[in-house]
Structures are given as structure tokens and as C-alpha cells.
Image 1 (tube, rainbow, N blue to C red):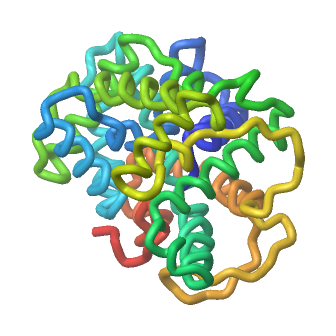
Image 2: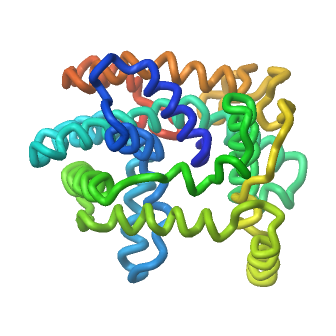
Length: 310
């Protein structure tokens, strides 16, 4: 899946193409952009009881793993039950969540294909698949930031992609709580999401930028315990070049990990594929057209794995 910067830039791009009046004002835009981070903040929960953190991590995996149409419709239903002053914030957040799904399902097979190809070349890389996956994502993050915004993580630090208000956290928490219980039978306190976004931001601040003294120290400590460092793989280097092997700009062939199809898409191609798919998904979502939404989801989960919808 893409990482925090790429999801934010995707959100900025599709926000500019939304119909007039769909997302208005700064707070609604922030809600939309935070929604574009999808369930990823749930993976970052750490400053709580271990049982609560595990619940958040498990829920993130369940959301990404399947039942996409049911979850999206539950999200839409959750917006309709918000207090009226929060409805527009909720709708913006939900539309952002849909953006996260659109980009994830398009790009995740591409990242997994690279990760597996590297693992076939070097068994040590196969054993470090989680770190390799994170490194590919962070490389694409910094490339797309330079490619689309001519900026680096010095001008636009990664934690800044999580800007929000207390109301956005509260509304997002209510919506995740609704989806968790009604679709995945997982009780989740409405206040947990605020803790997740806070922890996600703290984790990013801790490891950014790549190559800093603090990041190297964290990496050294991780390697003593695990033999490898996820923190260093996740952190972002300053990039001022259009070159990026991880983005496959030469369109070399790669094999879809779930279908075996040989493809030649670059990451830029997949980004555009998701951007073009988004309007139809959003219209079906807003209108509550269940059958059309299910057709557009096409059985794909957030990984792009077919046959996972129900």
C-alpha cells in the first residue's frame, strides 16, 4: 500500500476534482485528507493498554482484508447518524476513506510484486519482507512529493500530512466505531481513533527524517533486538530528483501477486488509474447504490486481492 505522503497527495488531487460544494472550508478539507489515510493510523496505536492496541491493529487488518462494500455502506450509514453539525465533516472524512481504498487497491499489488521479486533474488530480503515493503513505500512517497509538488520532506515533513482538529478525530472515531461493530463484530471505543492519529503522528516525528541521529540510534537498537530496522525503512530521505527505480518509470514487467497477470504499469500509471476510478466510486457511495458500488469494488480488497468482498 502507499504510505502517508502519497495518500495525502492523492487526496489533494482528487479533492480538486470534487463537485462544487461537496467539500467546503478548511476543516472539511482536513477531514477529507485525513480520511485518505484510511485505516492506516489504527496500525500505529501504541500508547495504550496492549489489549486496546491489539484491537486497533486487528481492526485495521480486517478493514483492509475484505468486506469492502459492506464496510463502505456502514460508513455511509454512520454519517447519517451523526449530529447535524458533524454531518458534513463526517461525509468529507468518509469520502476520503474511499480515496484511500481506491489508491490502495490499485497500488498495493505493485508494491507486493516488487517486494516478492527482491525476495526471490536475495533470501535475506525475503526474511525482511516487512522492512522491504516499507522501504519501497517510503521511496515512492518522497518521489511523488518531488514529482507532483517539487517539495521534499524538509519543506513538507511527513507528520504534517496528519493535520486535523479535535472534531475530526471525534467524528472519525465515531465512524470507525460504527464500522468496527456492525461489519467486523469488533467493539472499538469512539475515542480510540484520536489516540491512533496521535500515536501515528508521534511515530513519524520520532523517525523523521531518515539519516538523523535519532533515527540511526533507533535503528541500531532495533537491529540489536531483531536484526533489522523498520524505523529506518519507514523514514523518508530528502529527494530532489525525478529518478525512482521503485516507481518503475521505465515500465518494466511485473507479475500481479494475486492473479499472475504480467503488467508494465509504473506507479504513476496506477496513481492515475485510481484517480480516474474514484469519481464513479464516490457517486455510487454518496447515492447509496449498493449494487453499483459492489460492481465497482469488483471483489477487490485494499490489497487488490480478488474474491474478498461479500
